[in-house]
Every structure is written in C-alpha cells, then in structure tokens.
Length: 267
Image (tube, rainbow, N blue to C red; front, side, top):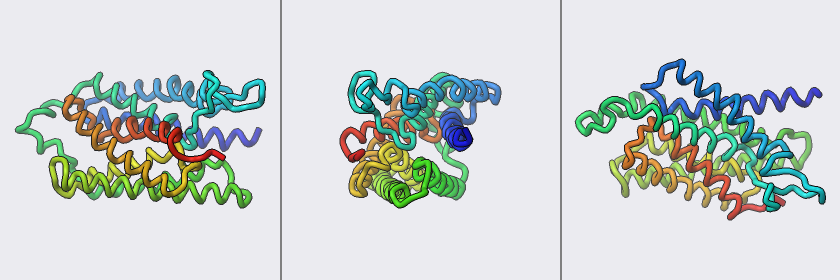
C-alpha cells in the first residue's frame, strides 16, 4: 500500500528520536562503537516492541476487543499517547538513565574543585538547539494527525499546535523563576530555561490532541516542577546525566502519559 510509505518515514523519525535521546546523557565518555551498539539495540529491538504495544491497534495497551471497543489487556480504556510522550520520550529517557549509570560519571564530575569545568561551553548554541527542537515539535505533534484534508483534521492540528505552544512557555518560565529565586544557583539560568521548555513540550506530547489550552498550561507547569525535582535528585545521587535527558524525557514523558488520566477528553 502506498500509504505505508508515509507511515514508514514518520515512524522512522520517531524511532531515530528515541535513539538520539540517550546520546546526551552518555556524552563525553562513551566510545562511538559503544554508542552505535546501544542505539542499534534501542531502535531495532526496544522501540519497535513499545510502539507496537501502543500504536499498532493490536498491542496490549490499545487493541479492539470482540465488542469493537478499544481497550488495554486489562480491559481498561486504551492508553492515550498522541505523539509519543511515552512511546518516544519515556523509552528514550529510560535508555538514557540506564546508559548514564552503566558508563559512570565523567572523570572529576563530582569534584567540587572542578565543578566549573563541566559548565556548558556555548549558551547561544544551547538556545539555538532549543529553538530547532521546538520548531521540529510542530512537525511531530500537529503532524501526528496523519492528514489535513478537511476541516476536522485541520482543527485538530490547530489545537495540537496551540497546546504545543502554551505548555513549553509555562514550563520554561516556571523553571527559569525557580532557578533564579528558589533553588541553586539562584541566578538567571538560561540552560535550565531551555530544558524547562523541552520539559513542557515532552509533557504535552501525549495529550496535545485531547487537552484544552488551560489544561496544557497546568500540564506544562507540573512538568516544569517535575523536571527541576528530577534534575536535583540526579545530582544528589551523583548520576552524571550531561544534558538532563532523563528528567526532561523520562520523567516528563511519564508525566505526559499519566496526565491524560487526569485531564483532557478524547471525545
């Protein structure tokens, strides 16, 4: 079927994203061959299984029963994950934290005398990268409608785009405020601001098609809080996640899926 080509390409992009999330957590102390093997396992074995469970229409978290109802293996309503908070980001985040634990911290990472040596080398590049990711999210989330041939699908893509804008705005500003006034280093932390934006994006990705705009703001707010808490916890545990991949993608990905049980209306 010709329709399979667009599905293949679109899912290929999602699969690659899940694989690349781990690179940031394991950066600066992982050999290329090790990372290549890790990514191959993520994209060829782990991601395909999870995506089948949720998006195939025949998996354990979403399939059609004998009564023509969409249910999970437990008989409950199906998991809602419109664009991949769980399928892509949570999977990548779990891979990231496991990779960071397995390879261990960078040499001298937790030596207080060397702390300044592990600061990001270019904040402008960090901001530019965040804008690139945010722009790409408008392809992932509204693009997950799969079509835009009539008013209904266009309107669906519209609310998805609105929610994909509001949630990261709220999350980013909240994290920026917390880092400036509440938690260390109590300064204008642009790097944390960027990660807060990403936390909001990941948090709304699962429910962006079923949430009202005010719900997207709440989800982004909670996502920002969870990101800050998870980032501080990793520091306490001395887990060297270079770019906070697990707090952003793992924790907020999990929150994005769970949020669909508290907010939104799939109808």
